[in-house]
Image 1 (cartoon, rainbow, N blue to C red):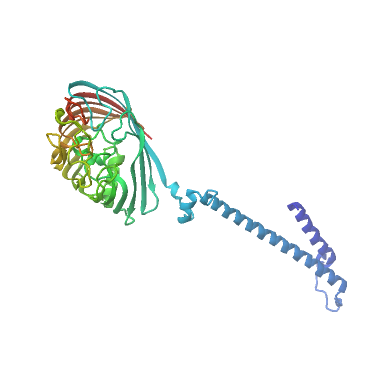
Image 2: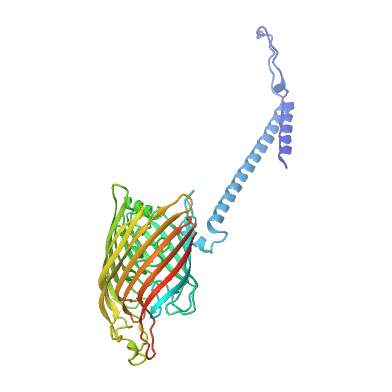
Length: 503
């Protein structure tokens, strides 16, 4: 029955009651004077028939009102059930057996609170390069930071293609996941652009201020400013051999790291990155960690854990200029992979240098210092290290513990324009004497390189870099043929260009 018919029925019932009780319709006649008591007729006994009809009418009205109340109650309950059903659908995605259901059933959000997947953000960047060897004075090029420069087949390449999923799952837990879809497996030749996990970790905050945190998973090792600095944020195209060889490949490893960052420094670290000053990010004022040691994407090879520690202090001077000084060190036993070579090109064929393989490893220990004068607009950056680590001996017959030293100095100038973006010309000199632990047989060499370049940040989404390099570095190819010397030095120059897209 529609609502208009309901209202009509109600009026009909009430009208019937009024007809039965005509006294309800009696109008009081205005009286100028009170009616004497003796004139007022005495009311006699109630009519039994009228009383019965009145009770019947009241019963009908009461029944109707009760029925309407029950209908309203049923409607309210239906609305509540519908709301609950919608809430469960939003919570479980229509089924209680998918991933979303499994997680939310263990962590039901409070009213108004975002669900875990609503707290995550997606961003990333890709780098496309074009490079050429300009001249070859000696040997064949094979750069540690850019294997696309090889002197034989050089054109376009994808250096990095990253997609980052990150966010705060709660006030005490954050998550970071970064795969790279332009990875080349170690030892790979023409098989390129594989997907590989670069970062996968959780930060567990010990207090609401996020001063104390423990990072668990695959992440960067806190050693070296340029190692911790994102490749999307670094001015030169590649990291230096001296600093990067300490944590190669990938500057990352699987472990547990503790970071201590007072609140005021949390804001400063964030400003150095978001403000375009090429900061390294928040790796704590003090850091300490233990990790596998073989490098990101490489299986652990022994029972030894590497240990690392770092202390840094950024300071803002009275004129607003920010400087930062750091000291860091690490120690552990590294297992070097072996590969067959002909030592010096004249020895026996198929020789795998001793000291490679196994599960014992060779002790490596390094200590480094860092100084950064952030570009405001002039910038200066320098790091230097010393220590010991695995390296192939001069006879190319054994990998031994050898002395390591080297570093870099770099100057830059940040020029902001109103219409044409930000230009940052730079010049960097680097040198390194030591072994390259992550390369088969840990080839030992003397590397020298000077880089001249300019970064043009056209917009927040697009950056262009042009770099010329004068290079003297070992080649990292193991040769097993007569007359061919493995790891022979390359001396020459290269010109490279990179377009970076941020999203």
